[in-house]
Image 1 (spheres, rainbow, N blue to C red):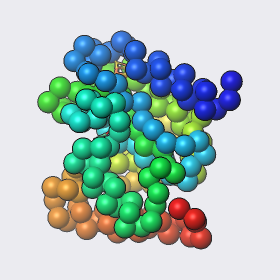
Image 2: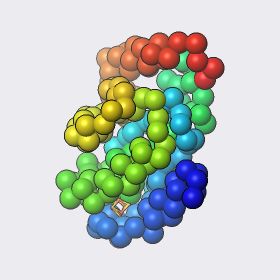
Image 3: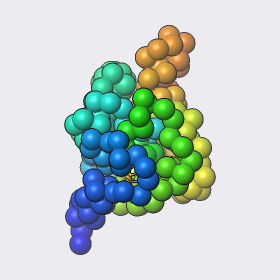
Image 4: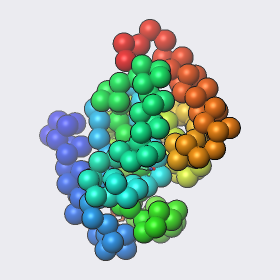
Length: 175
Ligand code: URA
Ligand code: SF4
């Protein structure tokens, strides 16, 4: 099996997963999307409402803000990999519970292994905590979650700076 097929296999497993209670309330699980061996792999918290309805990551309001940050820095979204710590939408957008994170974690670990990004970008405190804990060799970049950046002008400013830095980690890139 090549890497693309391995990634597809995990995607299928996620789509039918019942390992935690969130499977009962989700419409669609959201495995994430993107390419193998990207420069950047973005890891959010959990799918929101619109993601839940479509199965696609970061397409709602937070996604629009993420798109803005990417565009501002000439980073092509289709050449990244974008996912979240947990793959199913928590009701009312509450934070994921520890048992849900634990149940879902092996999918993220597998995805990181297969996707093999140059840099993992943690969007928010939860991804930061979870990814730090994995003690990977991969380079990790920490910033805020786009939903916070959207809501708070100070965080928006910081995110704009962070994404500039992120781009500068990668000078001469074609993305
Ligand atoms: N927030 C996330 O963390 N992930 C999504 O896919 C959408 C919003
Ligand atoms: Fe499975 Fe993760 Fe969805 Fe829970 S959140 S049902 S562990 S895919």
